[in-house]
Structure formats: structure tokens, C-alpha cells
Image (tube, rainbow, N blue to C red; front, side, top):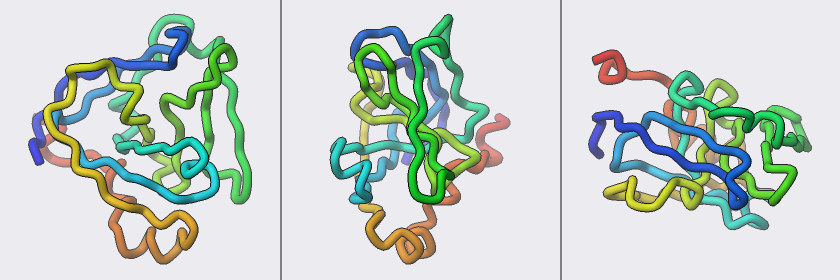
Amino acid sequence: MDSELVLHSGGCHCKKARWRVYAPSSIVSWDCNCSDCSMRQNIHFIVPSERFELLGDSKEFLMTYTFGTHTAKHTFCKVCGITSFYIPRSNPDGIAVTLRCIDPGMLTHVEIKCFDGQNWEGSYKQTGIALCSKATDEDSK
């Protein structure tokens, strides 16, 4: 995968919540089958939180839902209901960006990996997903 960071923009359906994120143009995304992600058919990629920025007054239009361990912060637009990003349980130091909420034409390649959220602990250990929110030496270049 390409490790050079580029600026992506995106947001929710009604465009009240807008953001930008630095990530490669070629990314690894996660298709999770936990109870929340499977209902939303959520496929997301994870970045360190310092690479994500909410724009303008977006924060005014956001609500947060938690359940289970309350580690994940499922953020959604209170106008249109879309979860365009959230803080995942697997990476509480990062941001999970919903793949389909990136503005069109910004990604050159997407590899989709499976995360077994129904068997969270085992999948967490096996996949290495926790590393997705860690900045690398390439980030500082």
C-alpha cells in the first residue's frame, strides 16, 4: 500500500458534518460484522486521531451513541443520521472513517479486510488492527 499521505475530505449525507483526513490514496479498510457495523454495512479505515479534523461548525450537528463497553464512540449527524466517522473500540486513540463518506475521486485503491466483531477479542489479537491508529515514521516526513 502507498504510504504517502494525501488530504481527503468527506462528511455526512446532508453535509452538516464535514471533515478532512490525511491518509494514503491507497488504503486498507475493515468490514466488521459486529452488531452495529453489520446493521449499517459499515466499511471503514482507521487513522491516528491527529490526522483527522472536523471543519467549521460540524460539531454542533453531531451526536454520540455508545453501548457494551462504551469504548467506541459512534458519532452520527443528528440531521441526516449518517455515521461518517467514529472512535472505534479497537483503536480508541484513532478515528474510523466510513469509506463511503469520502468525497468521490479521492481514493486510488481500497483493500478490504474482515474484522470479526462478533468474536471481538480473537479478531483484535489476530488482525493487528490496533496498529492502524499509530503514527509511523513515514508520517513525520
